[in-house]
View 1 (cartoon, protein in one colour):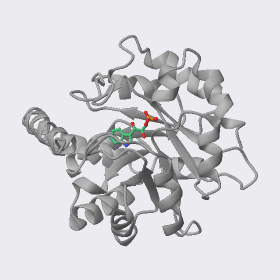
View 2 (cartoon, rainbow, N blue to C red):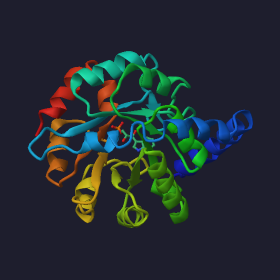
View 3 (cartoon, helix red, strand yellow):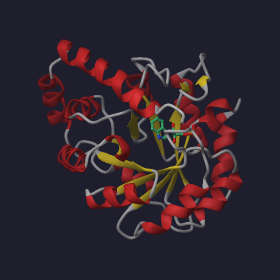
View 4 (cartoon, rainbow, N blue to C red):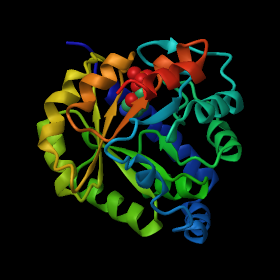
Length: 267
Ligand SMILES: O=P(O)(O)OC[C@@H](O)[C@@H](O)c1c[nH]c2ccccc12
């Protein structure tokens, strides 16, 4: 049995969080978040709602590396990447903020925020309201909530908090049971991660298989991970998903503007 990387990431993150909390109290972020609350309300989900005849909606990810691939782009320039994604036609952006396994730098999110007005997803491992307040204070339009690392009560409380603060939650699932838990906890935007965070195996068939379980009139569905070609998009589009989250393929391509455009004309 391979080691459960997710558990390891959460343990390291918990230590980081303890340290952060001792430096900056939750009150600091809460007050900032409450001032901003609602300012960017619904931007992210609105950007994912395509007209049925339109091109696919793509959330382009700023990703320096990952636990499975290591540091992919030590030279990644956030300002240039964001502007390429914008020029290529991304509907929204995702910025990884996890440092120890995904190699994010402390200022990646703020750099991205000051370089674009596109909706921004903060992509991290989150379970504590502290992290949600902080994300809103940073100017996030959406936060990632990974069902696998949350109890039902945590999930529900975090989704409610997001709603109160006017920030979208992308609620990430990987199997049937997690989809049910996401929907029952009040998720509106449901992500289906093609990558099994336990084993790193990736297959877009995961989305094809699971998207049918979500009522697309009541929820938005995002296909996440492992998209490497226009064919992948075509294959999954037929399953009725609203948007695609793409990282590695774009950051590794020498020309993210063209790579993104190629995905957008794929349907
Ligand atoms: O680089 P990819 O295979 O295109 O995947 C992007 C994104 O889906 C992936 O980074 C991701 C999906 N869910 C996550 C949760 C935590 C960290 C990262 C992720």
